[in-house]
Amino acid sequence: MWSPPPLLKCRMDAELDQLQAHLGARYNFERELGGGGMSKVFLATERALARRVVVKVLAPELSHRVNLERFQQEIATAATLQHPQIVPVYHAGSVGDLHYYVMPFIAGESLRAALKREGTLAPIDVIRLLAPLARALAFAHRRGIVHRDVKPENILLSEGEPMLADFGIAKIIREGNQTGLTSAGMSIGTVTYMPPEQVTADPTIDGRADVYSLAAVGYELLTGKPPFVGTPAQVMSAHVVKPVPDLVAQLPANAAALAQCVMAGLCKDAEQRPDAEA
Image (tube, rainbow, N blue to C red; front, side, top):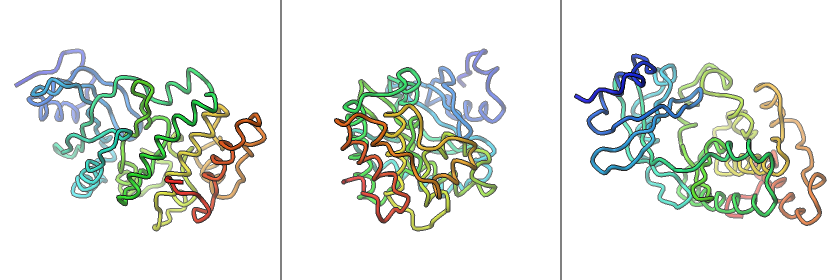
């Protein structure tokens, strides 16, 4: 049986050793890429096809609360999305009480990394990012699939082209996380872009929730800061009750149409919000 390199093995806890042993015949693990409160992320090579992949493993404290059948169902649904701007899912499974899924490795960087480096983007560059992402969301929404966690960390840049990753994962986490939105797995990075109806746990949530999140991303790309800042609780409250600072007044006149579009996407009433197609 394949054994991981000593340095990699030292960094893995018992649960990930278990995953390594389970997938070692299929994937040659190289290194940990990182992750957040919701998952650990590993770079690997699929042995049969010699292609590089990313293996995402739900954090153990979340895996314990996530229903396996529900997890596999949501991943299977996400895997049906075939679109140039959507990162596909190759495989999903579990070992013991750990749940994982496998995606292609996208050579490039996240939009978060680009934003940290650049600070803000020119309006024309923001349009070039938002337009294809909106088309990808519209594609998913026509099939009844809502992302629920559109944020710079889940937008990957491949040769300058944006791609959305982790469709459906936020829904799985939310259903398994009954101790509150700001507990394990719900970081400030998630609530920063969360639409009001998601904050209030509206059961009728639809694709317009993703529009709000994408507009919040656009707002940050243009201004260097998200619509609301503060503690997770403060930000969630602001999404529901606080007016969004007017973007039109912050941008030059030639970007007014873009600013108005972003502000429309940030409307607190989902019924008054444009859909992704618009």
